[in-house]
Image (cartoon, rainbow, N blue to C red):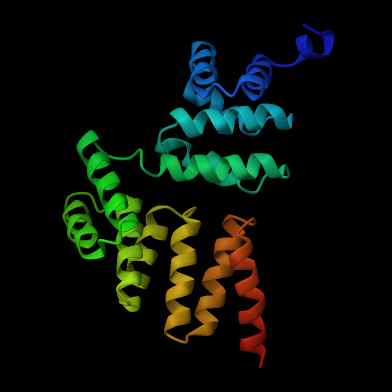
Length: 219
C-alpha cells in the first residue's frame, strides 16, 4: 500500500478497491462492517470528493428513506460524479419506504408503468395511497400513469402531492412541467422545470426546455 493511499480515510480506500474490481457487493459488505447509516449520511458532506462518492454510492445500495435529505443535497455537489451517484441513489431510496408489503406494491406499480399498463398502475396506486397517503412515490407513480393517459390536470395534482411529501422529488417536478406544457400553460411549465433544475441541475433535457419556454414566454 502506498503512503498516499494509507493516508486516505478507510471508506476512500474501500471505494478505490471497488473501482478496481467493480465488486459492489464486496464493497458494501466491507463498508457496513465499519460504518453505520448515520455515519454514511454525515460523510456525504465530507471535504474529500472521493469520500463523498463512496458514501453516496453506499447509501444507494443500503440507505433507507431517511437518507433522502442528504442525497438531495448531494445532487448539488460541486463534484459531478457525486451528483450523478446521488441521482441514482436517491431514486433507489424513494422506494425504500413504508412496510415490506407497501414496498412490494410500490415496485409493482413502477413495473406496471414501465410495461405501459397505466390503468393497472393507477388502480394499484389508488389502493396504496388510500392506505399510506404519506408516501411520496405512489403519488409520483400515479402521476406518471395519468400523464401517459393524457389526464394532465390529474397528473399535476398528484405531482403536487408528491412534492408536498418529498420536496426533493425532481421527477415529479419534471412531470408536472411536461403536463403544464401539454395544457399550453407555458408559464407554469417553466416554473416547474426550473424547480426541477434547482433540485437536480444535471437534467439537460429540462435545461433545454427551460431555454425554449423562456423564449416563448417572453414573446
